[in-house]
Length: 237
Image 1 (cartoon, rainbow, N blue to C red):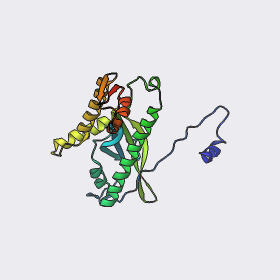
Image 2: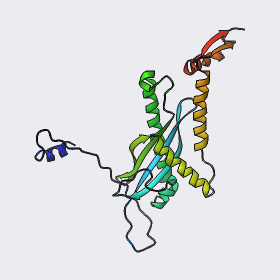
Image 3: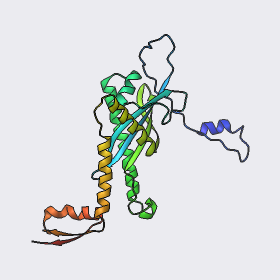
Image 4: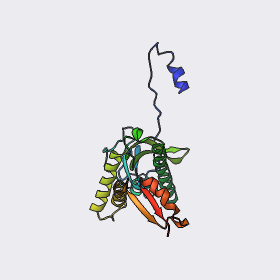
């Protein structure tokens, strides 16, 4: 950035400004030989990872959908029909199983880490700052661009969102079922997240009598009660 500012210094006047954006080159992949003699254009791959808040407030990657397009064009949601990660990598010439597995592992770690960071930040906010006493993020979409650094495939995070990634992943899920693929985990994980939140709302503020509260085995109840907003009174037997 400093080098760019020095280069623009001779052209900028007082009160002028310049917007500098980082350029991330797309991955240089060993694409398979084309079926026609026409030259193959450079392609870009956008990876959309959908992460849910699972039981125990743990982030869980539940769906991945990819879209590919021309490298020199803006590759956004809805620009192309989504595909799975394996199918997209196969089309781009990434056929080594170890390379695919390493990329999938890095994708899971990075997307779940983004969700964990957001959950930790929300936990430090007051109810007013979060938008209400029950407001929290249960679903997060993380967009990545497949890039290459020193001939190594890398995932560069572009943005986070919810509804656009959800739309893309649901479309990929529906397209897969239409061609006979088995049901994925996305509907189940989404339903679990919504039901868990609904159950929390139902029991919040309720009074519970705990029989045998003096036992060591019941110690976990007090922490769970604070998390669920319960009022617990104990009775030893």
